[in-house]
Length: 403
Image 1 (cartoon, helix red, strand yellow):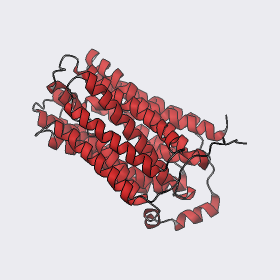
Image 2 (tube, helix red, strand yellow):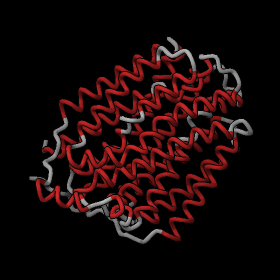
Image 3 (cartoon, helix red, strand yellow):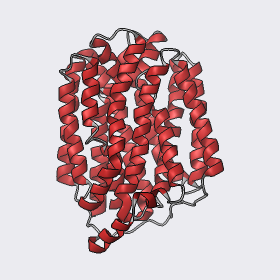
Image 4 (cartoon, one colour):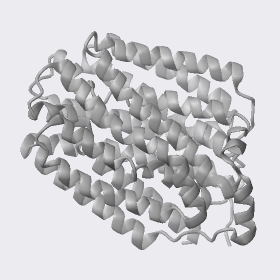
């Protein structure tokens, strides 16, 4: 196994394990908030949204700075400190007694969290540029497959032993991810003095001026805004539809459908980008996602909700990988940390704003969350078709042979 293949395997595995630990408990945070004494649906959704949004909101502010640190000193240490923070926070969350304790813990964690975007930068630097879209897709697939497994296991554990012990299991999973990264990943050789000089000339302003870069930040923001809108309200929505006795299992299954289909979408993006531009792939995926959300908003039967959720996940996964690949294609190698730091900030801001907005809106209607998501995706498709500069990112069919 070559160094780049080993690093890609290490990063992909760590992404899968880490995201499994996260989704072991986070999809059921609204149920935990209710255990802490919050009673009304609106208050539960709001506290859940604040807890889910606190970490990405603060991480988004720090991501470009940490990206600069990663460009100079390597990304491995950034992911290690992030994984360690999750171990300690998960353990602490098992002992909270008030909903605001969750928000406070998640806010503190935001200073050093955000390893998901860093892993994308790590794998993009570890492979030849011709394989970047494929490598990014694999890591994002792992980030989706973890949430496919996590909610199912978490739902079973929550029903069998309760929420508090499940946090300890999640902490143990993060410890496994930390050990895997420490042992398996080797930081690629940096560019030396010349690389440092080039990096010094790449300012934040330079990066924002890259072709389509600001637009793609907006695309990633909107996709995450829609993707993370389900977290605070899906269990409550299913409860309203009558799935009370099987609530943890049914909601976990739907989260898993979203995750699996999203993972398939990440893989589909690499195939589509061999045949069409990122502009077409993103716009078409957004339209399909809008159709899926509209169907989900109107459905009550699982036979409607499951395929609708699958279409949403497939569309969001495809569009997200296409957007990251299009942006990565214009970022110089010596500025990957900063460039992907900005992309991560856009993603995290969407992740932070989305659950809070969902928590506020749900007091009026659960359906509004899904309808507004459909409108957002439809508007995104129109904006991309009209504004994005056409760029051919089709992958060469000739395989890359490594020495």
